Image (cartoon, rainbow, N blue to C red; front, side, top):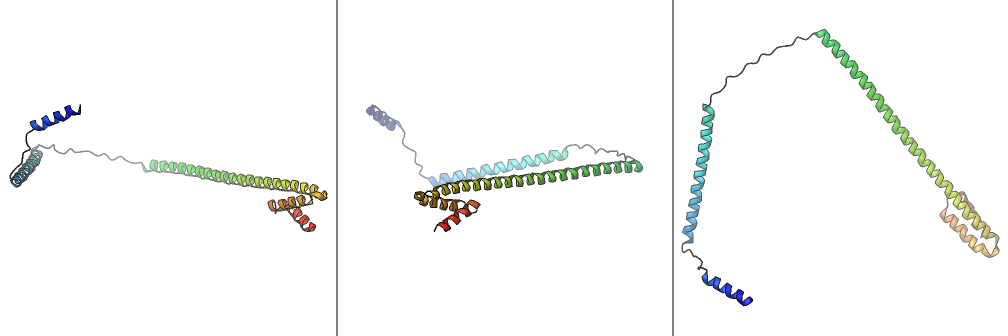
Length: 184
């Protein structure tokens, strides 16, 4: 199969004409530049003719005379205008008062919500403190039970140390500290 391909390529190369080589490349380039310049000049000239022709047509077109408008001035009844203005002013003041009351209500609601959040957080903190104290008390009670057995006194001292380390700011933590110092 490759032999067929090579043979086909060889025939194609033999049938192809030799590439053209220009003897005077510089003159060919000069002619191309002259052709481009001539085409540019023709294009610019055509554009100028179109613009000038359009302007001439616009100037020569007949124009319509300007139309006149009649303006009628409405008479204003000053008394009616004053009453309407007073009515609108009263309505605007009414709406302003309502808006101020709504803003006050919203502000009060925000303050109430903030107070509720503070109370809720303090309730959570109190609940955590109560649970911490109860846990410390439970561990202290376990250490006290171990302390009753002379063989378990070292385990009791270790539990007192744990209570003191884990819950130093509790009542049970203080009692554990007292028991440790009393036992040494």
